[in-house]
Amino acid sequence: MPDQYGVTWNCHDERKVTLEEIQDIAITLGVVFPPSYVETILRYNGGSPEQNVVQLKNGGDLMFSSLFSFSEDSPFYILDWYQRRLDDGIPEHLIGFGDCPFGSTYYFDYSVLTNNEPRIINIGELWEEIAEEGQTAAIGYEPIEVVDNFESFLKSLTSLGDD
Image 1 (cartoon, rainbow, N blue to C red):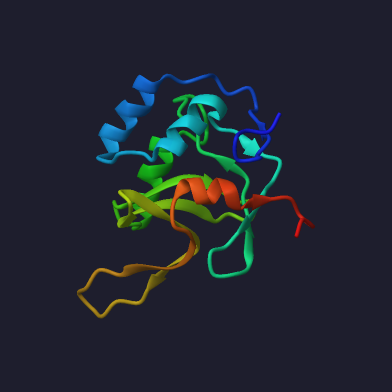
Image 2: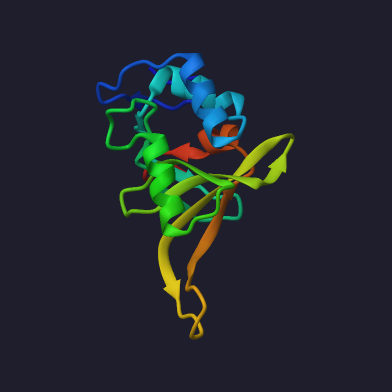
């Protein structure tokens, strides 16, 4: 049955999480999650939408696979994913919340807020930029602006072939 945004979720046997667990992770990350994200995680922790095409704010589209999980035993546990991306050189203000079938990650970008909610970006390939001798190499990436907030993200989800 579709949610209030028209999205039907498959939950892959992920366990239900509590509001307290979500808030604890937000505190660990030093952020406040958008209310629509909290609501979605409470119902569909680690879920995959049947409508898996994301309509970009500025035209075009991308694919979406699933939300990261708030279950510690999941291979897609949000805190493990966050640490791996920090180790890859992704800045702390980018909090991954989901992925696509081609390996890119969807992030809350807490450096750009609209009505106190982070914008949504997608980052695909990461690369190491060549450094001058004696300098640390930087990690390069090209973010794609997706939408202004998580509620807009949910509303942008469609099925392949929908107009």
